Each structure stands twice: as structure tokens, then as C-alpha cells.
Image 1 (cartoon, rainbow, N blue to C red):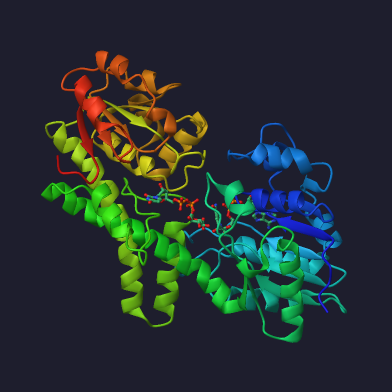
Image 2: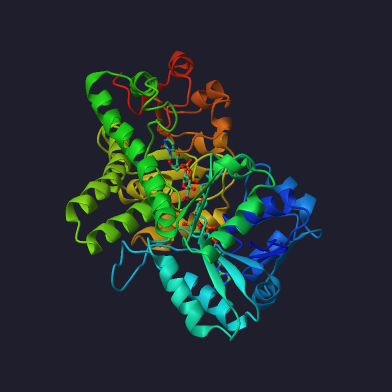
Length: 465
Ligand code: NAD
Ligand code: UGA
């Protein structure tokens, strides 16, 4: 029979582990939730008034449960010892070297955490793979756990991928489209699955909790991200045709999305998708396909990432072309550094690629983002390519407001769709810009007519005029 989960430990206090387990704590007052991480600074931040990640609604959730049934700690071993169920929610980045470099997922953090569970646990546990992993990773986890466990300790492994999107994490967790749980189809596997299902059933309707086999669950996560990203690359590929023909990508996407088989969501053309997962997970799928000797399948998915690279490059080049083929020495304002609005996360943000392109052209750049810290912006730029820190600092200035960034700019380039960019005093900004004053709207978010009436030349992704 399934156990009743009373204590949960989550290994990894990141963008997923933190919000997900904080919501579990709030929705399940009878369960004690401890989130552990090796990173002391991150844990200190979770225990402070200044949480380590920005996410609308997160502060309230954490404040309402912290100290009651929600705890943050660096004592990983104690967390493991006490828990009946352990989420493994560590990072699984793309490998930088060795076999599969540039494509395969680096599973070292996951394996270290798994090994720690086996070494420390003195009683049976349900171990839940929360991180996004290649298909059949649960097999490796089971082997590690079984080979290192104490006598009498049994481990059941579940796959329970997370589908939250940053910026809307709390809303997504409160009302998920579905929760997916994969387990072995043995008696014991099904019992473990039921135990986790009962946790979610505290707030998620049972019919939305899908239970499948382990491998289907693992693959569904990669598949979901690949298909979401593919929609964006499709719409971005069409945006290039729109620009060349005079069609309007918003109108095209609207018309296409009205077909209920396609659906209207996630069809917004952009400077390209960013974020820590889309590219990583598709490359992971490409690697998986190649290792399964399916080169055509690999090629198909790789094209989604290639189209995204092309979109970023195309947009940056359009700025240069429009400014009469040179931006050397010209002042360009970049509005938005995060990979999407309502997050301070900059992982794989298109702004980084675009800024780097402008730096290579020796433009003078100003950057403003309402949530991203200065340190993060410098780190992103120095980690990106091979431009050394000194010339970057000489050519790029980080500003405290959009108005400050736009003053005297020959081009204003909107990379992130922050709501506040709609409400700027564009008249005032125009007054301080040299003529012609260009605005490049990489998110189709600004009121084109208003800006044109003021006097701006507006260039929008996916429109021909
Ligand atoms: P993250 O880097 O923000 O957090 C991971 C945390 O794990 C870090 O704080 C790190 O210090 C900690 N960690 C690593 N190894 C550890 C160990 N052995 N013991 C204790 N702590 C350890 O990553 P994230 O964005 O939360 O992503 C985690 C996983 O979830 C990834 O596999 C990712 O693909 C997946 N995912 C992410 C999102 C998202 O929106 N960010 C959404 C769905 C799924
Ligand atoms: C994405 C998925 O939406 C989540 O379901 C998944 O859990 C997560 O990846 C993950 O596995 O990490 P996230 O990357 O946080 O979530 O944010 P999205 O809203 O998906 O946006 C990703 C990127 O695509 C952003 O740069 C966004 O601006 C861009 N985008 C999104 C578009 O350009 N057009 C759209 O129509 C939608």
C-alpha cells in the first residue's frame, strides 16, 4: 500500500526546487518540507527578506510557510535522513567538455546528489527525479542507489518533471495544466506513484495528475519543451517572410492560431527564445536521437535551435543595416536584459547575443533592465565570447532607468517585453534623441502609431512596413 508522505526533502534550491516545494508546503500544511542546497549564499537568501530569485507572488508564498512547515538549509544529509520522499531538483546543464560536449546533459550534479542519498539514508525512500534529464536516467539513478544503499533500505524512483515557466511560476504551480508522474509499472512502483499523487491531490484535481511509465515521463518533458520551442522557431521563421513581403506576423499568427487544432498561445514572434531550458533540452534530444542512430530525427530538432540563432543574428544585423550599415561609435540603447519579462533570469537571454554583436561592431551601448543586477550583466558579457572585460566596460554602460539608457541614443532596441516599456514617456525620450531616431521593437509590444506620430522611425520584428 502507498505510504503517507509526511516529510519531503528537496535537493536543489533553484528556480524549480524553491518555488515548487514552497508551494507544496503552502498547499500541504501537514507535510514538513525542507529545501537543501550546497550553496550557502543561496540558502541564506531564501531565509532572508531578499529571496534569491524574482518571481511574482513568490514572496507571499515563502513568507506564509517559512519557519512553520517550510525550511531552507545547507544540511543536505539531515534533509535526506529525515525525509520519506526526496525531490532531486539540481541543475542539468549542457556538457561543456568530453563526450557529447555542447549537446548532452551534464548529469554530474544529479549523480552526486543521488550518491549522497544512497550513502546517507538509513531507511527506505521515494526518490523523485524533478530535474529535466535524458530518457532512461532513472535507470542510472536506480543502479547508483542500489549499489550504495544500506541493507534494508529500498528506493523507489519516480519521474516528476516540472512544467512551470519563469515569470508565472507561482500561478503555474497553483493551477498546473497537468502534473506528470512516471513510475515502474510494478506493484511497488505504482504504490510510490500513488504516494506522490496524494501529495499533489491536496490542490490539483485528480484527473489532471497523469501517471505513466518512467521513460514516457522523462521523454515527455523533453518533448514538451521541444514542441514549444518549435512553435516559436516556426513563427520566427515566418516573421522573416513577413518582413520581406509586407505581411504582419501578429496578423498571421492570429489567423493561424484561430484554428483550434493549432491554438492561439505561444505564437508571439520575438528576437528569439532564451531561458535555461529550451536550447539545452532540444540539444539533449538531438544527442539522444544521434545516440539512437536516428540522424534525420536529430537534424529535424537541431533546426529549431539553428532557426533561433538565425533570428537573433538577423535582428542584430537589421539594426546595423538600418543605421546606414555602421554602428561603430554610435550610441545604442538596449531595453531589457532578462530572457522574458517578470524574471531576473538572464540564462541564454537573446539580449546577451545581441549586445555582443553590437560590441563586436564597436558601438557604444547602454543597457537597462528593471530586475537584472549589474553584476549579472557584466558576468553574462564576460562569459559569452572572447571580448575581454576591459573593452566591454569601456563600451557598455548599465543604467538605472529606461530614460537614462535612451538619452542621446541613435537606436533604441527593445529585447524584453517588460510592461513598463509601454508606459515610457516616449515624447520626452524623443526630445533627447538625435535624428532620425530609431526604435527597434524586438517583441512587437510598442504602440507603433503613437511612436511614429511622435517622430520615431519604428522597425518591428515581423512587419514589412
Ligand atoms: P538552478 O541552477 O537554479 O538550481 C539548481 C540548484 O541545485 C543550485 O542552487 C545548486 O547549488 C544545487 N545543487 C547542485 N548540485 C547539488 C547537490 N549535489 N546537492 C545540493 N544542491 C545541489 O536550476 P533550476 O533552474 O532550478 O533547474 C533545475 C532543473 O529543473 C534542471 O534540470 C532544469 O532543466 C529543470 N527545469 C527548470 C525550469 C526553469 O524554469 N528554470 C523549469 C522546468 C524544469
Ligand atoms: C519554458 C516552458 O514554457 C516551461 O513549460 C518549462 O517548464 C520550462 O521552459 C523549462 O523546462 O525550463 P521558460 O523558459 O521559463 O519556460 O519561459 P517561456 O515562457 O517558455 O519562454 C521561453 C522563451 O521563449 C522566452 O525567451 C520567451 O520570450 C520566448 N517566447 C515565448 C517567444 O519568443 N514567443 C512566445 O510566443 C513565447
